[in-house]
Length: 356
Image (cartoon, rainbow, N blue to C red):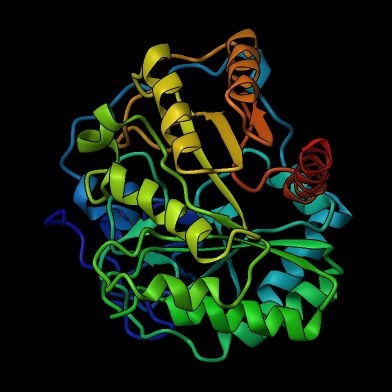
């Protein structure tokens, strides 16, 4: 960590040196002053959210092209969704990862819940979620709060993701299962999509705990091509992630599997096509491809902005390889339009079964 910063995270308290918080939301702070209501959700300073990146050289952030610019979030629907998230003390990946679609999704009452805290034990170079040692154990009341929020939002389809929790023996598998069951109990007609960690440091049996809870969609993102893993996703293993998704199908063939990658990190077309082939070999149903956007100068640099025509060619190629569903656009994210996409995914499976 930067020698100028000191971060202590007892429950509900954050202490940070004044030098790193001058100008933060107009607040004047004394050294080691308790920030009270300010949480990691509010603090976007790279040295605080990403201490492992503090000493990296800055990477220039290129100007975004017109096709990936979005309107600033706001409006009644957005504010109503935000209020429900705050009321239930829930974290969303929409905010933590700086998703460009947050305004559109929240205005429609759609939010991707992020369980198991807001501090990730991994330090992927592309990700804006806060990293470090999680300050708290898993919250046993969180599954109930998620279920209550889903019911209040009236969601037909919900996406639930999480940080990596390598500090927990089962990687949070049982917590995922409890959250799925809680949502099923409160909203039995809501379809459930989960976006899980890789459970790399856990006993292989923990995957069955999640699968036995019967999510409708099991998503785990490969994120990038294997050749870029050492610099983009160093804490993960490409073939482990592929095998995880393959095992989901072996354990329960009725569950849809889904995975996604980002482009614009330095990959080439042939590597992307090879990932598609690897995914199909693992019997993955749904592929997402979106443009990588650099959260801060300390994160992995954007290699290039991929134009919409190239995304369209990836979509065509993926359907040709046998995916039931493909979403490939600059603004595609794992949970973007997930409810509509799930309906199309289900229809595609039924059409394929009918044709056979």
